[in-house]
Amino acid sequence: MQTQITKLSRLALALVFLLTASNQLFAQSSDQKTNLQIYGSALQYRGDLNDDNEFSDPEWGAGLNLNRYISPSFDAGLQFTYGRPEIESSTLGQFEAKMGTAMLALRLKMYGTILKEDAFIGPYLQIAGGGAWANTDATRADGTQQQDEKFFTSALKGGAGIRFRFSDAVSAFVETNYMIIGQDKIDGYDVGENDRFLMHNVGLGFNLGKAKDTDADGVPDRRDDCPDTPTGVQVDKKGCPLDGDADGVPDYQDQCPTEAGTAATQGCPDRDSDGVADKDDRCPDQAGTAAMQGCPDADGDGVADDQDQCPDTPAGVQVGPDGCPVDSDGDGVPDNEDNCPTSPGTAETNGCPELDEATLKLLEEKVRFEFDQARVQDSYKQLLDSIVVALTNYPDHVLLIKGHADFIGSEEYNQALSEKRAEAVKEYLIEQGVQNPDRLVTKGYGETQPLVEVNERLSRRRTEAARARNRRVGFEMNTPGMELDLE
Image (cartoon, rainbow, N blue to C red; front, side, top):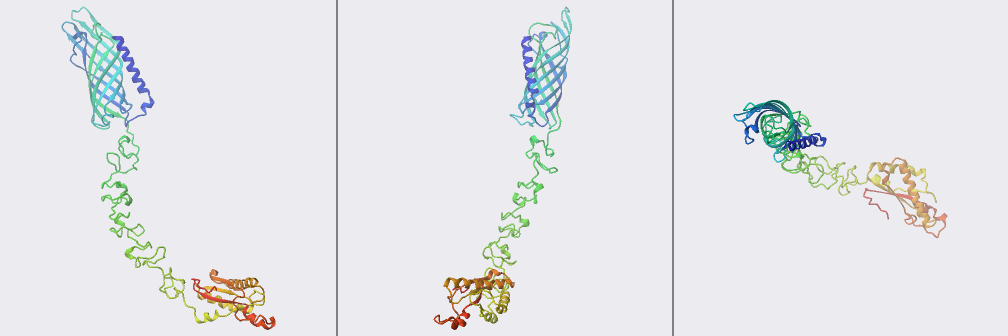
């Protein structure tokens, strides 16, 4: 029997040693991994002096356990107990002993698996193995033998208990263990089965160390559903920021902490669900846009409908503060319809001014050219300077510069010559500072539009004057709609 107990003890010691020595297991930590238990112990003897069939009355002792968290299912511990078992038998004798034990224990917890780790009631099972030390004083009833002996032996125990959790730091426990030691002589008799005991322990446990609390909100990480809460933010028992109106937006981020709102509006109500909080919404009952302070803008012109005097403005049209198209020159024709947005005109002329008489007369003038030449003669530069002034007076108009040639030469040559004459006039006007030269349009007509009909059967000498009139550049000014006579 003693050999079997010794083997069981060694097996238990080896198992506990392996569990407690494993860094990997220790890495599976809870909040406070170390627990110290202090307790009173009641020890009941069973052995030769009571015929191995019942346990004696309890004798009090004390104990100390140092436990270490391994996983949600297991704790390992180092347990020390001291007791003074004794019994007196009228037929067999008596003994008094001082006995201490030191064991390594493995505890199987029901809390952390079946029950929550912080449940108030936490049942557990445990097994422990180690050594027992005893100093016994035994006397037989007939006085024939008296034994005063000290010895050290192996010990094995197993049992069950319940932990009562009062707080993260303090708990109480009660447990009962069945213990067998490796000797049968604590009572003075070394016959039959080894001595055994019932050990009843009642005490307090204290969790050592400080629970890990990454965000320092007072709620340990294990129970913290929001482990990254900013410093200083008030939290609930789950470690999450307080949300007084239960709208899903924590109070510290909620601009309306007493009114349920949405995350999009930073916790404030939004009756029309347009993404603009009612407190900032000029039209809280009409869905609008943030740019319009919550008011609708049907035509998308940047002016809210309640201030828009032209609610149907076409897309892309520039508008004023009243929501109506801009009319830069104030002629009653909006810029988007005005061919001359910087010059007052009329609706009939698409917003462009009509040419005055002086300008119309000026446009009837012609620039004449020498035979087979495209050079602007000095005598016509004053005319062209006047054209520059007219273009300045009508900055939105387009000027068509029309080049012509007489019939001398091939049609192809004359066409090219007429184009060169028109370009020469354009270049002079540009040199004189015409604004926006892109509105100067040139076209060559060759010999197709003579101003004077010439009898080609006559000699050049006799037709020179008529041909000279046909070697010309004329002008036409019209609106930017390019409604020009290009034929």
